[in-house]
Length: 138
Image 1 (cartoon, rainbow, N blue to C red):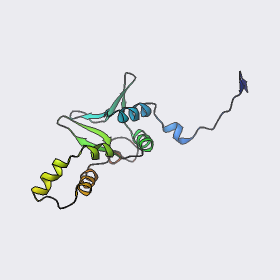
Image 2: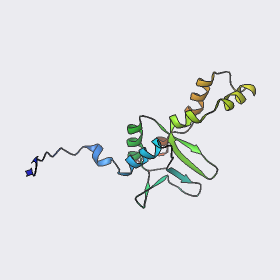
Image 3: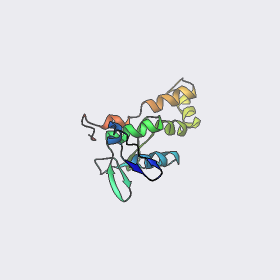
Image 4: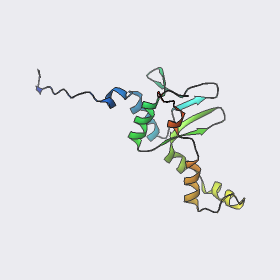
């Protein structure tokens, strides 16, 4: 097959191509802007994302693609009326030295700031842990 300007090369479709959701790129872009678009309201069963006017239910393939693109785990953080999925590195940078100082003064830790901060992040639930074997949210 030829098209104007040269031959057309058709590459095989990979499993990754089939699992990739178009919202993934938008979600990763939002994370790099400091936004956290993956949310589950207290009254909702699923984490969702609004993509081009449609509500997308977040599944394991979306989480895997996001974590692969960002090279970071997604964790779940509890809000007052919702839960959000955010990159672990964003949580880590959001932990303040004031919180650590308060924990030290209260006798809750003897760890240095860096170790304490890493421990706080490691205790958060991982996004991938909310999925059943079939890749849907539990």
